[in-house]
Length: 378
Ligand SMILES: *Cc1c(COP(=O)(O)O)cnc(C)c1O
Image (cartoon, rainbow, N blue to C red; front, side):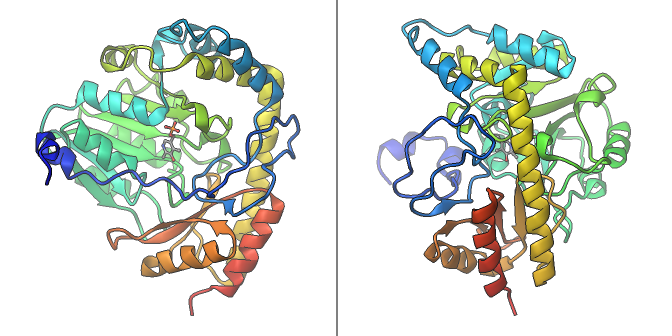
């Protein structure tokens, strides 16, 4: 151990590093694309490992970034006022119910910082989004991981049973990353109704736009009934702005003000604000929805294809599918890599191991289906 390591908080020194999805060694440079079919030109391995949107940025978004770039000697708007106004109108909430951040993961970290006192318990399903254990530890919380079901779904009854007098926050993820299943609306409402007061519930809906199950929960209409509920959304997935880092929380104005109080000032940069506003204009929204619809259609095709091959695939409501491969996850991902496909294995702790594959466009999905057919576990 070096001297500087000993300066770190012991719990921080022990944190796992966030593992990003593998990326091709030489990614092709960005080129704008106005059409639903504009995807990254394929040279080198195809990246199906980070749940990114495969389509190229819209020309109007690129123009907004170019324009905003002429003023980067100035600080951005502190509260991203123009973007807040767009989002408030889109979701039918007031502006003091929304806070934007440098990706929804930053907003999650700030929510926890605003609410969790040292030693408070934060319950979340596991396996789920790998940022949760890191964010909880950094906020001085104690992680309580409740296993998901054999079908990759949240076990809300088990989560309710895990609540103790020290519980301060429950995080749930719908659709769940990496397993893809969405939470049922009625089950979620029953869960909220039976919760004792004094617990904040964070509903992470990073993939909300891809959900097609009519019985899946949607956090927004529930916010007026539950002031302790906060929904997390992002522009990284459906809107294809992952590289700009922009996400937001919607909830009770008091909780949202708490996030603003602890957040890094000017956390959403000027280019991100301009791009997000451009992405929310009606014409751009129409292209984004058409792209999401195309990904959803491909998702159905891939899930059906995999099931026909004999794979057990949980219900997929995000832009990805999950293959429960257990300890064979890493070997499967390595084999895919040798055939030019980067997929995301999870088998670090021996619990619910598997491989997450991001849905891309037709040819890439076909290549993956052909690969999967040849690698069905016996
Ligand atoms: C991708 C993702 C996010 C979004 O992260 P950003 O920081 O907004 O890019 C949040 N939650 C889950 C579960 C995700 O998969």
